[in-house]
Image (tube, rainbow over all chains, first blue to last red; front, side, top):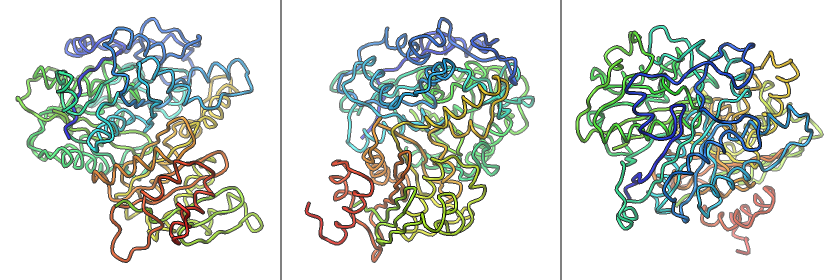
Length: 372
Length: 225
């Protein structure tokens, strides 16, 4: 059973819409700027990529404000669609607010309430499932949705992903010394950390049969997926990259595609020293001497955590349709192991290429998607 | 055929390897934390004391499930086995602990070792490291305390060949249960029951302990259906 994407949209620090994101990435513009949402004086950095106009610690959480804007202008979602929501921290700002207000009673079943709100906003009848797999949350959500369709359990799944920049998350990443002081520089030899970002996105996946029946033009296809764990360290990636190599192998096998069919790689590319090196080791191991064009969008919109994979998938599908990949924003001088793979310029790709997308997260969680 | 090869369940007083029907009441001879020494794990769990409570529960239940299934494990000899967990509230308690601690420091100092557990998938990550599980690892929730979503996802993953075996389970505040699922067990391999027999029991709900007892009745051919 083929799994196709028939509709998608995103809200990123560049604004609403996939074209806004694509245009800014191709222009080499970064949305990472000084952060004014909360006091950052105690932290490693005071930069992040945030979405304009969001109100912090108000009635609605940041992610619900994002999702309201996202679904406000999108075409209707079929009411019978199954729902998967991918996030790392969801409405964590609501909990922050309660703790800051000194409230003793913390709400239970917050996940159920969040799922209900997203379902209502999207206009679907299902209760939905929340997926959390650190910074691979989106990719795992897409993989689960595709599995539901491929196995015949569903013929239509809406995948929604979101995460926001909050004091909770920012202070945590700062405590782990993971932040770049100013603006993340994925794959650069002078990179030293990630920049946090926020985003919300959705993709509607369907079986090819249902998409055909409803006369929907596919935006692209989820050919395959591979998930793995390093089983090595909670916050640091494997020094041998064997987890990501395994995930890529599984994704290509699931897609029934060979390494030679891969036309480009949308990398996780956080800008941390260890993540980017781990990814390049994996790419070198899988593709050997063939240097496949690689890019990361995190120098543009920051690391949007649980939303990262979905934003990256939508951009990758656009790249496949338009035939050129964006430069890696903020890249100045490629690190030795990334030389010849990444670029400061846009590049053309061959027709009928397979796109490979990789993500990784705390707990050693790796994911790879093969798209066409 | 997807089979359940074993199941482990634990609360703050007792634990059981379900297929082997070996219940142990431990409250009279050791503490919850004390179980980490020799009773449950087949080798020392490095830095067990720094894990949060949910991670400890999950790791105990996973160890019991693997033991029940007769699956040897070694963090140095990793295997392609997945791990999916669920609960009702994600990492709510860890979230509260982390942010209160940060606020108590005057919003100046945040602790990475508390932040780490504010991801609902972190207890699974800890288990993956100790048991050497290299398959897919993720947390999922339908907002309810039910094994159903994780067992369905695990079955699907096995049917589609995503991994060779999957541990699927759930925890509440004071108990956890995990089961080992495999596709077409090898000849002569003991199983607890078939997933198709287990699903009606899981759908019915009830406590994890009752569920374990019903699985055992299925194994013995005494389940009323």
